[in-house]
Amino acid sequence: MLELRFIRENIDLVKEKTVRRGMETTLLDKFILIDQQRLTLLGEVEGLKNKRNTTSAEIAVLKRGNDSDREKAEPLIDEMKKTSTRIKELDIELATIQEQLQEIVMAIPNLCDDAVPVGQNEEDNIELKKWGEKPVFSFSPKTHWELAEQLDIVDFETAAKLSGARFALLKGFASKLERALTNFMLDLHTERHGYKEVLPPFMVNSASMTATGQLPKFAEDLFKIKDWDLYLIPTAEVPVTNIHRDETLNEDDLPIKYTAYTPCFRSEAGSHGRDTRGLIRQHQFDKVELVKFTTPETSSDELESLLNDAETVLQMLGLHYRVVTLCTGDLGFSSTKTYDIEVWLPGQDCYREISSCSNFLDFQARRGGIRYRPNGQKKSRLVHTLNGSGLAVGRTLLAIMENYQQEDGTIALPEVLQPYFSPRFKHDPEG
Image 1 (spheres, rainbow, N blue to C red):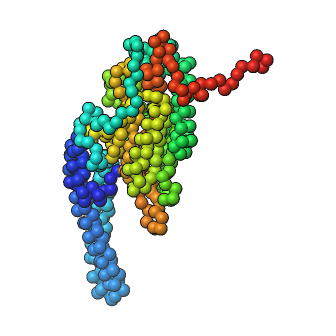
Image 2 (cartoon, rainbow, N blue to C red):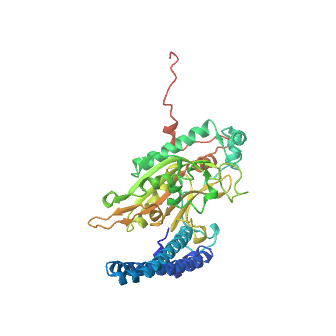
Image 3 (cartoon, helix red, strand yellow):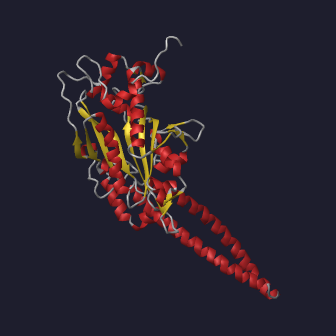
């Protein structure tokens, strides 16, 4: 979240950046009104408390005096009882106002970077570059769901019987490819890119969801565990970022870089009718996540490095893709700048997002109380957090299916994945 004082002192800037995102300024107008009410109440409370302190000292002096002085103290005592009652009333009113103000602050999105293009939706995103070439086929390429049915490697009907719509049962080659891709990504990010692998819980509490910005604004997108303060994670970003919630890190330890595999769970609220075929938009999917904690001075460079790390996965898999900068209207709530990597899917004749790499500046760190102590300084500062998909495993799987499909209906295997398919255990007929 943004700092309350920053919003108050830079209200025009915050309004301008909010409008750039395509949002109304109604929330900020309400902030101005309630913040003024808070300041007025605060001034009244502080005035009454100062009066109480002064009068209490006067009463103490009168009580030590003669009978006449003690008589003079009585009306002052009665007046202070009324003052104390009024202070209590105002404190309750002030607490309510402060709670309302906090709710508003929590609902204000991060300020977009000045370099982010102004636009309304994904159609206004700006293409930065492309890598590789689109594959050329001597036949009409099939979609991944057509290949899945033909090869009997993804079963949507059985998944629907087990769980409902937007679930998938991977079988045989597809399930092994999913596992191989996960291991390949984790190995690459830990051994080449220097990330530390972690395996976090797949359920987190509301404090964790609040720190990364999922709550309170996006509650309807989450799967809540009934009667528990627990949610199924929508992305590993949530538990991994919260590893250092309410901690103060040492500058020498930064940047801290984590990678994690987790399943992800999303209700996909508001996406009715979109991408209903295949594996594109599922309630449950696997992802390998990249998370960074760094200093404000280096977070911009760390975003570029994060993007390169995610791109490397696709390059090693030989998959054509493009990188786009998200416009203001397509930018996530907590992000100041985001790059999307979109992989080419020949069966669908389009690009599809396979990774988002974002810089949140200190937006999440302020919500989560994640700080660091600069060398030689006593006062701590908020860290900057970043995260990106490295990659969405299911979408990488379907990209391989569509890009590596053969004319005879089979699917070739990228060279870098072949070691993950080598037999590790051989059958011994003698036991």
